[in-house]
Length: 78
Image (cartoon, rainbow, N blue to C red):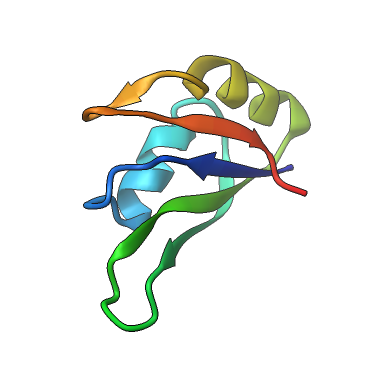
């Protein structure tokens, strides 16, 4: 199941994003969206969890939590 994570810290990289989610299940893919010109994080990314059950746990555990000083949002990607 594909998820979107919003309001991530700007200094996050894909490894940080994967580490955040793999605590809750198997991550099959992870993509942090970067600015084309600067290469810096745009503050959101996509994570593919192998099982829907794991994805739902990740949403429940991570949505609304603080990462550094940012309150992140996690929901199913459309």
